[in-house]
Image: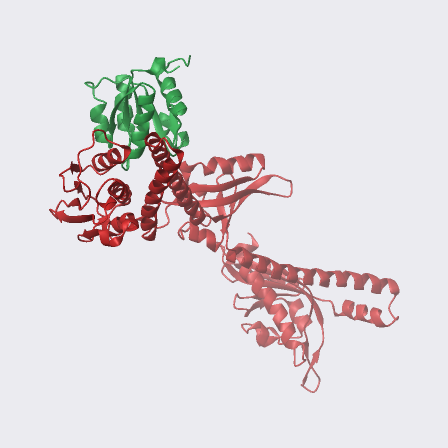
Length: 507
Length: 125
């Protein structure tokens, strides 16, 4: 029958009790709330107490280390060691502790005797693994300690004794102090681990069982209960995403793996669809004392925001490149076609520049509204104002134009105005241009615009079309899917344009 | 050198009339007959139908906000060689169409001719 079973009910069998009682080593048995549940004769001898006086009492009521000023600290040290043994389920040692014991004098008064002890606190478990008792084993080392102190200051004891005992006890104290410091450090490290802004998890064994994970990791996976579970069970959605073979490889080779901007799909809340999260991470092998890889340290941070920002930026650059290249092709076309109608380099340069500026003006108007669109009246004004505001009268409602339509109409108005200035109404002193427009059929809006020239020289239809008029016609029919009519009554040119205004932007 | 390409009927799909006019001018200078230009994918599909005799095509990848690939598909089915033109370069093409002769905007007359000759499998003599 094992000790565990014997202690299980709290009763000691007679046989064991007598062995326990006969031991020359002092033992006291405590309940988890540190009440005295039993003790042996050696304990009573060393403490000078009686069984009746202390049984069932809280340990530190029975023994309070006396009235000395060190007493609270002495009690604290013993209590801390007992609580640690209870809370961790691990045996704890106190190499040297000072603890005063009451001695009943002949006159009935108590005096306190300073004594030094070495104590071991051992937790005792029931079948369910709960701590039911704590066994304290104390050794009175007052003599040794006295000897050691005397060795430090005087020469009475043999030099060898004092060296040996002093060194041994000094080392024991040092170990105890080191343990306390290490535990403090360990607690600080655990705290750092838990609070670290990056996610951290410790996986052990071939099934990658979660041993530890910090708050950032919990946040990453949507606060699921994963402690002690294998990875596939804890995060089932991971299984098909290629991470498990990577972990297997780290375990098999002992080589770390570093992942950059890798997407992982996670079930961050129970009923939601999988969410893609981008992470930078490292799988670092954990080795035992023999150098065997026994687990994987997972550490990393989420980079979703920066990955999405990079994607947006790439899209924007692609789109910008596309627009620039298209615009360059447009400019190339203007250059080539303008060159064909101007044999003289000087007039070519004038015509080319004027067309470039017309294009640029419309770009300016669009830029002012973030390339969402531009107003028809504004475009018309921009393209005609060089010829005198009073000579071109414009009349119509506000019409919001999409960027492509704005660019086309800008070129059209430029060509019409240039033509009027060269050959039409604006070439004569009193000539004028009247531009009227309206929106027909608001359900399927259609812009109808009439450009009418008056007061200019008599006009006749040209026998061949120049680049300007081809450009106007093609822009209306091709780019704007509209219709155009050019009439040449003798009073002046009349141009009627009708274009659908679908997908009208909101200005 | 342009003899081999002279007289060929070349469909142009391009939504910007200025660019379309440039292509037409270049094609006419090479002795080709421009067909179109189509300003939309629908019009491009109509013009690439069987009744229109075609020797080749120049296809702008992005036509009035739509991708031109249905037209490319129809031409491929008919066995009409074609060249993509794009501001994005070949990198902007989906995998399916990688390796297809591609013109980068803006383009020179020589680039248009070379791309068309490559697409049609004509030797540059």
